[in-house]
Image (cartoon, rainbow, N blue to C red):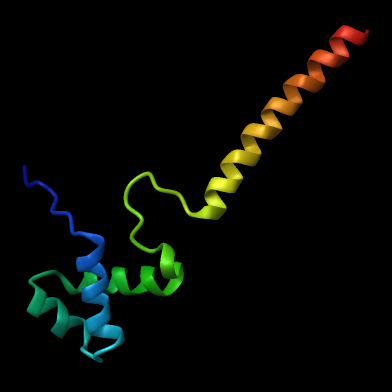
Length: 90
């Protein structure tokens, strides 16, 4: 079974920079870096859509995702607290 190769954030940013800043074509940049054009194309799209939050790594959430997680936990805690108060007051 072939192991999956991982690339550092810096490598990805440098690769994307070839396309966005130095006007290389995706296929040309990918060939010179020894990676697939599809992969580089995905990196370019991620950089365009995520900006500074691109290439976070596994398990790292964007600030918006962190806030949603925190709010869901708070909502759950408040629902439990509300339910307990209803039971105690009845």
